[in-house]
Image (cartoon, rainbow, N blue to C red; front, top):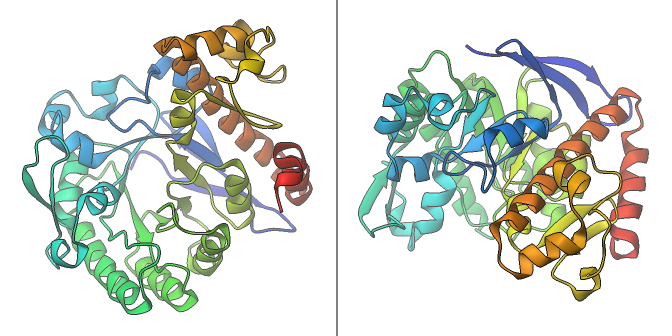
Length: 376
């Protein structure tokens, strides 16, 4: 196996943890934010730029790479690292979230075998099973693969969620049995909505399968409240091993990263920094700003005087606004660089706060600056 996680410190006043893993001779520290490279690329950015931002793990999407170019082509290229020229660690999701979003009638399309759905590219009828998801990820040769789980609707009733959790556990066992890449870690996924008993059951039973790490799923369906998200974390974390990575899937709002760390989460991912960039938004210490606004037309200051990213060191808000309003790709590139670096730097500050046992104070200061009077 290419790397192992080591817990280095637990904060005194929270469940926050400092950890690290060594990969190809380089140490990566956690907690960590992971940029998303859905189709073997972080949108508009090069691998060199990702490394310059001091990112660690990046994500690629099993579903999209299965449909194109196909896992066999990636495998022939030597795996994802060779294919996309990235020598840092790579995590592949299972494709589960994508196929469930494409399954129109979930009661009919989800069966014990897997999920029936239509390709978003050509409408072809497809079936993704736990075994196939793992086999695809084995061929992609990522460093971390994810179990294939059911992603139930956020507002599903209790019995649906109960049956879903039990099916996810059966799928997890099938996927683990199918896993054959000895250089690849395999993570299990905890589900159960915001129900304490289902989260406890899912976590305990998933841990019994002895995965290399564990994820908390079902918190990024766009309909959960923050209270439900935090409850799902609180109900899951106590039953996850301390000596393995804990991953909260699909979360990128700054306050949610901080609150997740406080609750014991190690790694996070989200498409939000590049998606926000494509719409002209920049993350700053004092909140999110929209550079399309006319107020920035003659603003010749950087996005942030405190940021060390290429965009902030080299360009002004006025110039980036011009690029965005002129629909020039370079504008989205610069904002993507800045937004990813902002979240990576946020995690650096969080790690520093944990090391000094002051994370709660850091959160309070961050919230005051970032949200002002808007945050309850």
